[in-house]
Image (cartoon, rainbow, N blue to C red; front, side, top):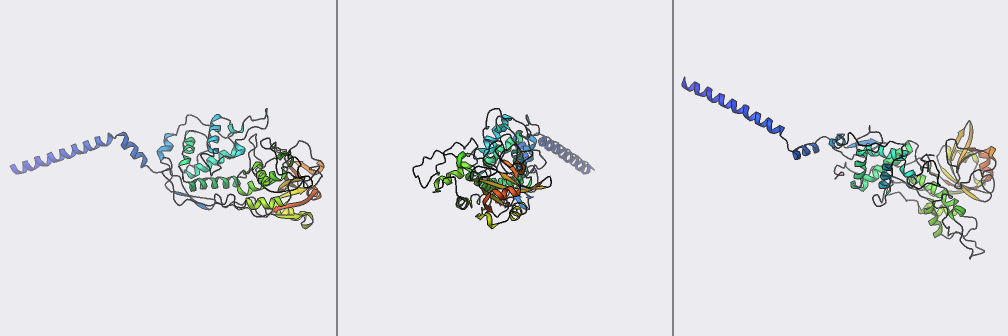
Length: 426
């Protein structure tokens, strides 16, 4: 009997000890140090568990973000939306445009930060404007971070992500930029941003632009008078350079300004009195053939110089409308100019049931066109260098075309990274 009591007492004591140990363990679990909390947060699942995602038929690797990062910035102290002007937009654009930060990337282009053309314009400084290109870039960055549902906004989380971009690998930077440029094409938003923030959905550069129009054009020579002073400028004779800029920017999806293409002309020996010859485009196309091959995989094919009697206007329509080719047209005196001139044929479209070529004239001068019954203003555009022209007018004034037989909408989307990146926030 005594033994049974002793055993019962021992069992009760063991049960009490077990209860006490559980209580102590529970109390210890509730008293977690800040360091333990931070470690627990780091171990939380990422925003999306999958380390890859599919876009444009390609499988891309994500930038992995711990969930606590999004929770930390759930309630931002500020929010700048697309279409607004704000100094925070300027800070973001300057940071992304800096060649020091991104020597191999073009997250923000020259046309998004350039100064106003003149005082009194509708927007004093394009840098302050949250334009559509910046919005699409942010959407692309969110996609890589698993934040597809986040609307483009400049807030604390967005700035945190942007400030961390220099820590990603070069291949990841190229993947982000490649997907961004591809998305511009998919949304029909590719091209330059005008000074008022609007888009014409094409790359346009004017030889008359004050940013470079007044710069001396050293190539200009006259064979009969080698000592002829060089006083002409890009504005005077730079139509060929501006056209090359428009075409090459379209095919490489980067902004190549007339200042850059004029430098190539200066380095050559183009002995002409009126401007550059057609052969200039063959030479500079070879020079820019693989300009963005490492970054995007784009290649600029050599153009064909076709004299007027070697093609029909119907062929030209099909090349631009159906095949999405581009052409630089060499015109003589007529509806567009009093002397020889180069312009870009961007497209062939129907407007109110009538067919027109969309012409990008690099020489901007208000109301200088003749034969206005065969010319039509581009509705909705503030760009005076864009004009619709009838096929009859184009063929009448045409001397030759420089044809680029490749689609202006083709872009070789590809993934360069081999794995997700999770330490890019450090």
